[in-house]
Picture 1 (cartoon, rainbow, N blue to C red):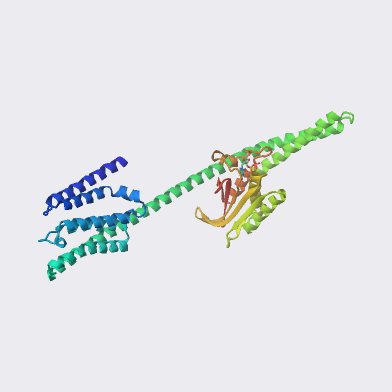
Picture 2 (picture 1 turned 90 degrees about the horizontal axis):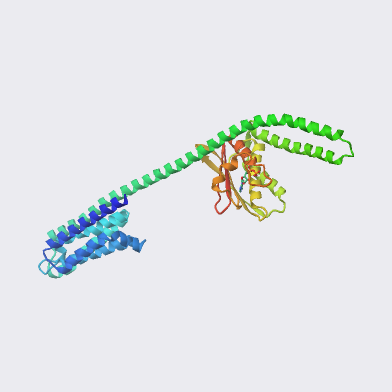
Length: 418
Ligand code: ADP
């Protein structure tokens, strides 16, 4: 593609040089300076893009000025005593700066540059008037020539503006497409996650039921055994105690397992999301009273009430805030909590974003952290985010994790308002 472009440009350049060379050959005055001016125009035209790239921001303005100067130089060399420069048939050379200005500027800029080119051309009238008189037909001819400059400039400018607008429309459509594509991929990943969690939920519910019954028997037997053991055998009693306490631990794990698996019964009513978020923050601050984590709030005004189950939603926010505190402890950091009105997948709702300054979540773990029992903490269970994800799913919302602005993780929760 780029090679194709280069070849096309080389052809255009060659053609341009051929045109200018033909003009040089046809030049009736055969003045060497005029040939040189034509050559300079050709060379400048060929290297114009590189010149603009080199000069930068003001390159286009300089390019138009240089072209007006070169065109004027050519006109000045194509005049003679019998034929003043203003009469030169090379006056058409001014179309080069005029068209260039129309390509680079807006309508007003084009008018201004064309007026300047026209003034540069008309300035040749001054030396001519010292020798000749301006006749009415001469003045008309001059006016027509100038008017044609403006006509050409405005036509080219209109075409350029239209194609610029068209290019802008294409760019916007391409951006929208890329955005929709990204959203679609994200929605697909979220749907896969929901399906995976639902399947895991079913599996765990079955498994937990099967584990619970024998656990009850083990616990009962251990307790009976403990009571029946002679008091003078402390080791045996201690072992029976271990069995009992470990069974309790397993039981609580199974209960959490079941709470993850069982379908949620939502008691929805319109709630002020910022109040629920505040409860969660307060709970974390009570859990870590000496924490040096700073909470930075950014709540939009006019947040509509959202139909949610307050208890379960608080569980969601608590999990996220606790995870953020855990990620930043013991060094501390900043937890930024942002609540905004959002429009997602055609639904109005509220988005709550928790951005911490902890170590963040590596990209390869961003989906895994939502799986039950996935944890990187030595004392973690790994059920928090899977329960969060399930509660948010059941509310018809979504949860996403992304890197936060500086470092750290940003968890975004969207809850639809209707
Ligand atoms: P747990 O907290 O028991 O590990 P979770 O399901 O809540 O279980 O979290 C799973 C994993 O997700 C954590 O072990 C941790 O690796 C990662 N994680 C969650 N929140 C954050 C966070 N704010 N910053 C970094 N990692 C996080």
